[in-house]
Image (tube, rainbow, N blue to C red; front, side, top):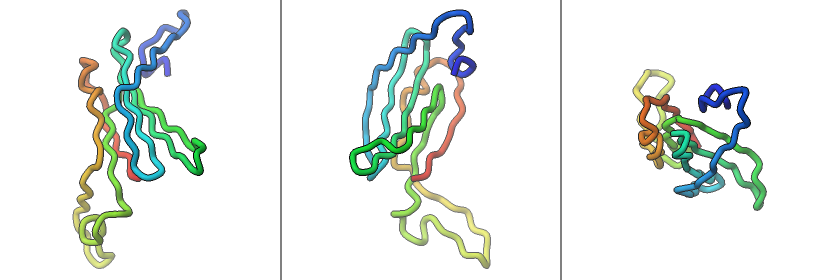
Length: 112
């Protein structure tokens, strides 16, 4: 985390958690926020089963796009084994705070 956030290894690392947006897609909960004093944006993706968080994915200074593969029409997100066709699955959510940190950040796609 220190490498991703730019914190010094000599200083204690205090991270301000300020959620800005919470949204859900079935069993996935997306929480987005930022630490403005350190120019850090973050996204958490939690998997919740029976009221218990069973998995946590954490992204720092990363643009995250969420796409849903399972509920799309067959023609939208599949290809035949006989032919290679481009796959286009529209996104259902995209992070908005990563562009506020004032630097270029990597982009990831989370398929749910």
